Length: 418
Image 1 (cartoon, rainbow, N blue to C red):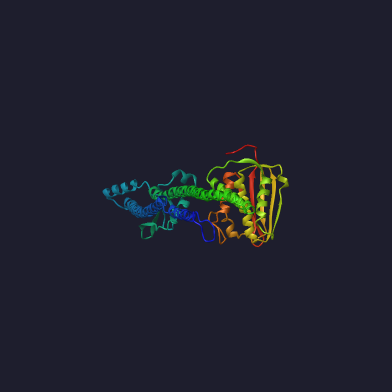
Image 2 (image 1 turned 90 degrees about the vertical axis):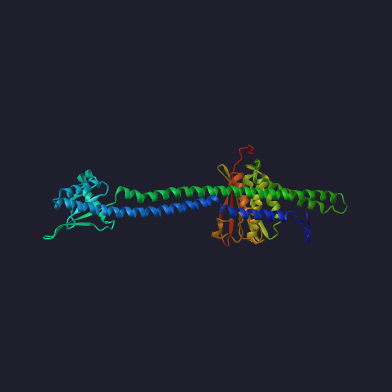
């Protein structure tokens, strides 16, 4: 254990730096792991499939136009040719087209009543069916194939055609595939976030336990030195104060040791707990800070608590309030009971929190202070919500007017939970 020039113990500087470095390295590497690579590959495959499917759809559309042109020419051959072989070949071409829907119109673009590969029953039952289909075919922006019947007087038929079932399926396939791939990507991202959050929680818990372990050795050593000071004359005035600080260090060590483990909750009088921590903080706040607190409505209210951890939450909220008022102002603690819950509001009249930062205040590492790691509110939220099954949130905040944090805890059922 080394001693700095100012007399403070530098017993865990290097260890904490190593853990901080490990944490940030983990944050970076977690975004570059194999899951992220697999998602990237899936996106590339889906994009390639879409491009290739559209290429195939274009080729099929070109072939279908050729087939329609051949079908129209076959129709013309049957009408005007006297060659039996040609007529038989034309008939074969016509009968083989059982996929591409076609509608015939005259030179005035009026439906003649001839069509192919459309629902015959719909044509009979719905007078607008053919005209509706014709408008759909025209929206494809395809130039109709024209078959001239005679030049004088001019007569011709136009043949509009739609997409075959194969072409529709080819165009639809990449969309379905994209939806499936998007679904799996979303699932992968959700699992990634859950896994990352779980690993992050484990890392914070490990860091807290390691801090408790590192604190344990010098605290034990200080207890030994305290016993020596007690046996030496002339130290009667300073020993009690040092003993308080050593006890405080033991409490901090105990708190860090509980992070990551399910603490034992016991039924406690929440009014006494709040007043205990408030009296402790008053002595360290200075004479320019005015405290208001009335917990008389909680005198007989029992809540399941881990006392050291709940004290830690209240300390963090009061410390944040002290920072907000900059050592001069009002801190108000109000409590009330509703249904099966207890509400504790810690309010200050300080500088407030900007709207952009309200959602960030509980994130690990976020802080607007020049000093500190930004862990206080993050740990407080975890203590309240994960360990005590309650809620901690910003009740309201307005810049220049103050901030109010609210704790909600379930009432005790006079049972111990471990």
